[in-house]
Amino acid sequence: MFEYKKRSLSKNFKINLKSLLPSIQAQSGKFTRSITLVYEFLVAREITKLSMVSKQWYLASQDHFLWKRQCQYLAPQVLINTLEVASNLKITKEWPEEARRPKFAETVKWKLVWIEITYKCCHECYNLLNKLHYLPMLQFTLCKSCAKSPKYSMMSEESAELDYRISSEEIKRAGLPFIEVPHSHWTGKVAKMYYAIDLIKLAKINKEMPLIKRENCEEVRRTEILYYLKEKGCRDFDFIEYGLEVEGGWPWNYIKGKSQRTAQKVVSDMLGQYSHWLKKIEKEGQPKKRVKTAAQEVIDLD
Image (cartoon, rainbow, N blue to C red):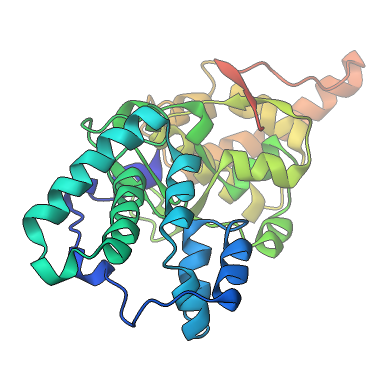
């Protein structure tokens, strides 16, 4: 997973408890209570942004029930109870006496629990120990084992165009988050990597879709070949799929790291076989079939 490897460990994230205290006097009223009802339909980050609109919106965001519900959306009750006890202890030890007033402490306690769940707890297995990394694109934290799940695999826009028939223009219009990964062999070019789940949703494919699991280095090498094929004007997806997925072929060996050739040389060799491939298809009269790849997993987008 590209993003997981680029991010620092969550244990390096430090919390300043005093910064969680309300900056103005907390007084509730009819208007602030109605705003709190609006907040219930939003996630924590949206609440934080809207709290900067005015004093009333800020005061409404200090409701401790609101932050407690945000925690309940993210994690099971057993974990929440454990973190609540830990947060109480942290507040008791580190806060000055005047800051431990109930109307402040309850709100800050649940904000602290939300921070612990978001930044220091795996979103999938709720692990608190195993090499946790916070991922800004997903806006939650994953451990090392969960980050390897096909559910969180990433692919380039070139691969998305081939596998899911999504154009780069559609991806740009959708504004999907991405990270840039350099090509190998120091070419100076970069590939934009997106989460496969986002691309599948954009393609409006059926709820269950075969998700091809590739190693990071394989995805980068595959992207290089697709990039140079596109640069050369080759847009026959059936030929490209056939060329990339035939075991033992030049492209397959390059993607697997078993070839010393550059991506440009592999593409040149592929294009040299294109006319021969077309004649073979014409002569045999066979439909162009996609060659089955290695392990595929089916994911449920719900």
